[in-house]
Image (cartoon, rainbow, N blue to C red):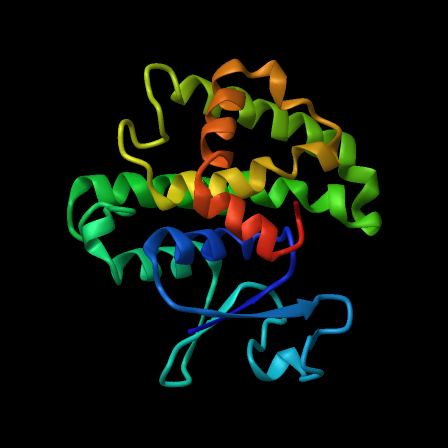
Amino acid sequence: MKLYYTPGACSLSPHIVLLEAGLPYELEAVDLATKETEKGEDYYLVNTKGAVPALQLDDGSVLTEGAVIIQYLADQVPEKQLVPATGTFERYRLQEWLNFIAMDFQKNFLPVFRPDFAACRDAAVKLIEKQCDYIDRQLVGKDWLMGSRFTVADIYLFVITSWLKYAEIDIGQWKLLSAWQERVAARPAVQKALAEEGLK
C-alpha cells in the first residue's frame, strides 16, 4: 500500500494507524499548493479531489477520506482491536466520534490555515474552544475516547488537536484533554510517524 500524505496534515492519522496496525506501506509526499507528488507526478491523477490522504492499494485502487481510510486499515488487522467489530453498537459509537472530528472539529480549522477565510478566524477559534470543552467532558473517567480501549478515533483526534497551536489555543487549559494528548503522543507508532514526516 502507498499512502499519499502532506507532513502534519490530517493524512498523519492513517500514517499512525499503519504503524499501529503493523501493516507494510510506502509513503509519497504531496505538495498541496502545486498538487504535485514528490516524484513529480500530477496528484489529481491519484485523487481527483486533490486532497490528502489517499491510500493506493496493492491492486491499484485508491481509497480517499481519512475517516474511511483509518477504518479500512484497522479492519485489516482485527486482532489489534483498533476499531470495534463491524455491526456492533460500539462501532457506531466510533463512527459517531469520527464524524464529529471530521465534520465539526477539523472543519473549524479552515480559517486558521486559509488567509482568504481570515475574517472568520475569531469565530472559528471560539467554536474550536467550545468543542474542546465538549471533548474534555467526554474524557471524564476514561483513558481514551472509547473508554479503556485505544482506537483510531484517538489517533484522528490527536492529529487535529495538534493543530491547536496554529490557532494560538493552549491545550493546557483542558486538563483531561491535554493529559490524553500526552498519552497518545507517547505511543511508539506516533513518535515514529512524526519522525518519518520530519515533524520531530
